[in-house]
Image (cartoon, rainbow over all chains, first blue to last red; front, side, top):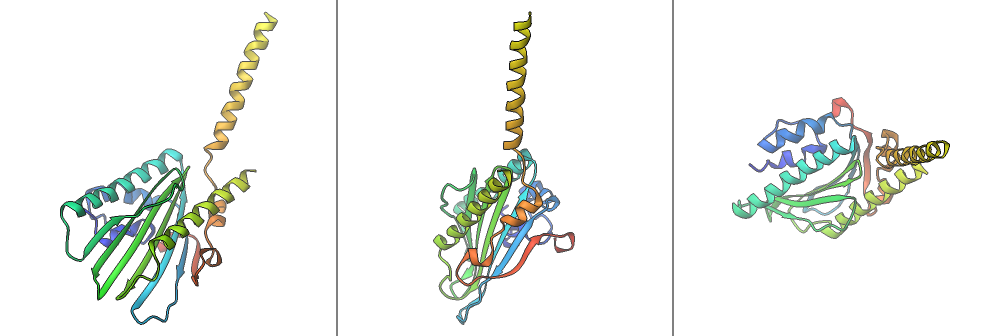
Length: 173
Length: 61
């Protein structure tokens, strides 16, 4: 089964019980990893916006381990996309995000829960760059138009990957 | 005999150098390097405000 929304954001959030078969494969491994995180909030005066937050997570490990975690995660999300196509649920829209060629492998999706009057939109992107996983999550709780476009979120992903590559290259020079 | 030994020595030396080079390529970054690679609010742009930046500790999981 496709995971509930809370499990979708769990990889860089607090520990939660696995909610599906594929969760069990990766969730335990993720919580063993040493995540480095940056959390941001975007203040807004718009009355139709409840909250907007952005989280960046970086983790490294053995290349084989990181690659297998990436494969498990992206495979799980792809399964969710297929299920959403086959069995659409009211108030639960999910679609894949188009991403530029960042890192070695990349996957992104957009999940929208609720309706036009009361919505929770999550954009979640996972990139594997060598032995590093980059996870970017953007959350918007709102009742009106999105504050950020998909393109703006993708731009942040590009910045994160560029900075990672630059810092790692500098440290090895 | 000496020239054959020299040939083998060259092969071993090149193989050793390749191994060192490959090891360097697949090396994982350290935690310190990861911490320095996180975006700052200024780099993210717009008017994002940083609330936390650093390693996730056990009590935050």
